Image (tube, rainbow, N blue to C red; front, side, top):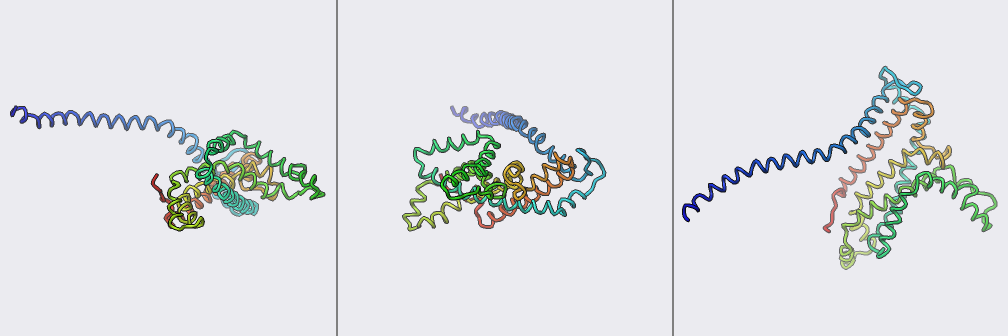
Length: 314
């Protein structure tokens, strides 16, 4: 028995030595498996995102021709993009419309998300299903719906006329920034609601009850408990709506008229209308630079306020 006990450490060392290559082999297989799983997504990202982006970057430095680009390399496209008075005006419109649509979407989505998280009860599943079902509706169908609602013979003007409140249709409801912003908020509101609802998920009702027991009113609960938690998700949703709204070119064409045109319309005209790919690519990269600047400012603001990593225990 003593001899067996004396040999046990040596046997254990041999077993450990035999098990080490097995563990290394298992780790290697795990890495290979992870790379194999990530390969399709990586290839898709390279083909459908990186490659077009690189092609646009090259186009922006070439000389534009009729539906073509050619050498030599030049910075003239960027100079024209920034010097054009039309581009500056459309850029200001894009900034205003994108910012107002983003702020309005977050403003209306936050109480809806709060109600879903804490007060909806049995209605939560039904309302979430309806929000998800709204994604099925076509983008163009929503735009045409608002065009029919805000138009001269639309629902609003007909209703006001039937009530005797107006004699002539209200022309200012359509073909301006107001119509574009309303349609964009309606289109992106469901996305923002879901993002904020997910951001409120870690915040248990007991935290709000504790804050109330400690004497915090509803203003203090929102300012010191709820808003710090949803600051990062709200900023992400804000940037999401801002980028998509400011770069939109479909909604302004149907609802914006001359007053509600955005810079995305100019990009569409450059690529499809005039065939000047180089100019369109330069405007696109100028917009991308602006969006990246907005992202950096929002991220910096969250970090300075220490709101980028606020977490609550589940």
